[in-house]
Length: 505
Ligand code: ADP
Image (cartoon, rainbow, N blue to C red; front, side):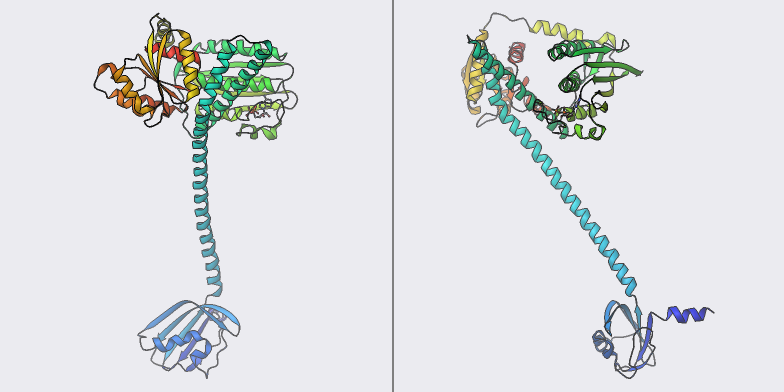
């Protein structure tokens, strides 16, 4: 019974042709090629020309795979086998057309997927390169902006302390507000580039949560009242007073959320609600909620608003950059938390997150120790100090001269080239150096290294405060490693600089 099927199927795709040793066809079945049994093998297809060059080398058998034959206008993809027999040569042609076509399709798909894979790799590399370029660009660009901004802020402050007409006073106030906005924008752009490049490192210090809430309540009550809104800060009694974490970044998250709540609420109330969740080991988990009764956000936009530069209501009176919430999201991610949102259009929004912070042991509360240190650093003697200012930007020079001379505590010498610093130090005595990093000829950190390696103690030990337009923490770390006692980022607060100088002289 099986023979019948074998005859029907097995032989259909295999053709047997017997030829003599000169290539004349002796016999053939007609499985799938119509063959003239009186002709020559080469008559079937020019491929068989090869027979004349192989017939003498043919010992036993020879196979050719994937041979394309076009016979009677039909195309076949075949494997062809030559077998040497006593009676002549047996040619077995197996038709694998469908097999090879499928195989080719698979190979093509595979090739395409390899090519696609390579394209994705290239695209990723391109994206990474673009991201790297963006971060370097932001870093350098903000660095370049910091010098002029420092001058503008400080000069505006100096002018504001002179005798002004009321019209001039108004203009100065406007200028100061614009400066503050510009500085905030620059800080936001830097924060987002630091977060996305993974360069933002959180610090861990003990701080007072209750003081943080007091500061927020004080600042935002005034702001809210200015818009005719109420502000409430509700803190669960179980929330510990002292915790360990990055106070500045937590403050940045809360103020960003509160600023938005104020911005997008026109009547009603803003609430900061802090609830105790649980305590495990020495970690306290708590929920922070910022609630408003403002315009609300539609649930379709819940994801979009956390993207950089995304703003929903492009209101003319919205001075934001669209970076606030992406900074909140990035900072909370770093702190191991996630920002969540529930909102109803026209009714208000609730931004909330749960966060775990360490609770320090009461006996080793470093805040109390720090307080003592701070007090003693504030004692200012009547002595005058000699400061060497190494700075090449003429505007920053002017500002620093005015600021420091106004205090009446300093004499200042100036160099505007890194290569001149050592000469100055050898010829004169100084109590402190204010050193710009980006100095011509020899960079500030390089000069610092030379000073720290100098053999004479009086020069080697001079306190050095670095001034830089960069504000990445790893830059700061590398300047300190070069031997700087402290580094201030431009534009700096006048009082911060003076406090720092008194700390080291
Ligand atoms: P912006 O600088 O525009 O405030 P954000 O990243 O802080 O940027 O916010 C992104 C967008 O999310 C805002 O433009 C606004 O449309 C929306 N948004 C944020 N907070 C609120 C809120 N409390 N109520 C309503 N809409 C909000």
